[in-house]
Image 1 (cartoon, rainbow, N blue to C red):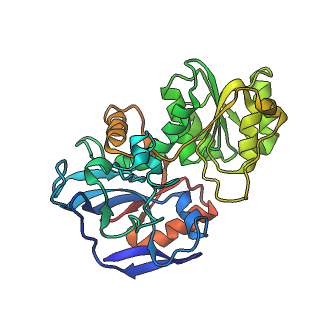
Image 2: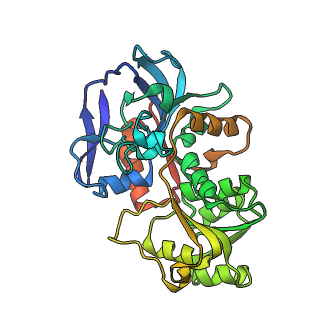
Amino acid sequence: MDAFVMKEVGETGFADKDVPEPGPTDAVIRPTKGLVCTSDVHTLHGAIGERESLTLGHEVVGVVDTVGDDVVEFTTGDRVAVGAITPDWGSLAAQDGHPSQSNQALGGWKYANVKDGTFAEYAHVNDADANMARIPETVTDEEAVYVTDMMSTGFMGAEHADVPVGGTVAVFAQGPVGLMATKGAALQGAGRIIAVETVPNRQELARTYGADDIVDFAEGDPVEQIMDLTDGEGVDAAIEALGTSGTFEQCIKVTKAGGTISNIGYHGEDEFVRIPREDWGVGMAEKDITTGLCPGGRLRLQRLLRLLEQDRVDPTHMTTHEFTFEDIDEAFELMESKEDDIIKPLIDFE
């Protein structure tokens, strides 16, 4: 089969690989739609270390090709969404309520990390009964592929932020995950959502997904702007959706005492993420810092698919470009350069 791989740090290309075989509890799917993620670009440039001929990709929906003998929920021909995070559900971490960290920190993150990813003609799914969900008939593949990571991660940011109904929240960066954090905050009943972004089409989408105010960091210090908007009070919660030490510090600064900083950014650079001491109340301002890796699991996917089925959210507004599988290298180049107003490129495998 054809697979799009990271040949080594900084180099991609197609490779011929064997079609994977499912174990007793596993499945093999034929991808139909996929999405390229900025974290794929981080991986390509060595954020998680050297890799050789590793198939890239972790956001995919498709059709079940084969299943192991012990799989009971799925059969050949089912349309399914596969979680970007595919935990080992028998792990001690899963039993302790942290399945995404199964067996080690970030251990549920397998695709394009410790095993071949999903940018191939066939993809392997471990623990298939727990890591896939059947797609409702009324939901398209393009809609469904967003539940695998962007919706799950973005909504997690809002969930972890614990924004009170009617409360205020600032979402730093309106890339795909930040946009879904903005939508998640709206769904949870936030009274005021402040989106921090400078790119015009992302600002527009942030408003579409529920932002009440836009803070353009190109026009001045975002901390000062947010404090002005809130009459000096700050926000009940701040969501870091970019993954830089600078935005993380800004989140600490704008969050009022007793509030929450929810980090969902991928911090792929710098050795340390710094906490501004005084703005943290020298450690005693009761500002909670939460972190998380995209929640996995069939139940999570089913709940997100239900939101699509009931027209609670339309993630396809984020699809700015479409490519065939054969042209996926062009999608990677655009995601790296962020040119042509790209937000999310959709990959068509059929």
